[in-house]
Length: 251
Ligand SMILES: Nc1ncnc2c1ncn2[C@@H]1O[C@H](COP(=O)(O)OP(=O)(O)O)[C@@H](O)[C@H]1O
Ligand SMILES: [Mg+2]
Image (tube, rainbow, N blue to C red; front, side, top):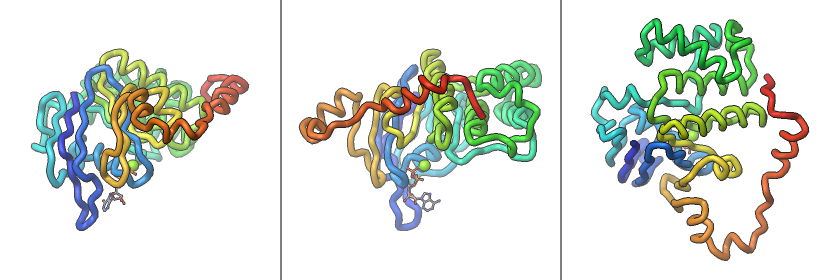
């Protein structure tokens, strides 16, 4: 569904992405991991057609994404790192607007918008202006905007930044649900615990290059002794926190 080969992007003399390759299959949640500045957002922006790569090939559902408008773009959903929404208007109006931009008919907008608001736990706040929302609520709306047209290929750029564990759990459940329905999902994060529980295959990027790739088992066995010597604690605090505070969504 997504094929990236030898992707390279330079900004002037800075090489943001330095010849990376990977592919994402239907039903797969592919984790593109890396610290800040690794080149994750640049990669996503190239695939979505927002910026033009310096070189390399990018195919989504077999279509070349570097060639301007294409059919594949319509089956692509993007959940950007920077929130893309109008702060002065309501969640509902935002979602209606973005749904029509995605080409949904007015009947589809009427059906999908309330369904999606319900799914991200914002139905009771649908009429409130987004500027009054908490970080978690904005992130959930950001996700709804990216998924409202039922895309088959989804690019998610750190969709859980700055949210509480309740919103995080809700967002991750929704992502798993989409993958189970056959979506190909490219997911970037620098939260390793989150990626571990979510993604079935990974590329770890640093300074524009892929420094390791494979399943978790493959990555751990590649790392071998280097990782065995350190005792990596389980992410038990988050589990205890959720156990004590419950999974119900908060602001
Ligand atoms: N528009 C831009 N102009 C110049 N440099 C940029 C631009 N966007 C990103 N960069 C640089 O490219 C590198 C990769 O950035 P980015 O793709 O945003 O990384 P990540 O999403 O992994 O944090 C960084 O060094 C960043 O400073
Ligand atoms: Mg980024």
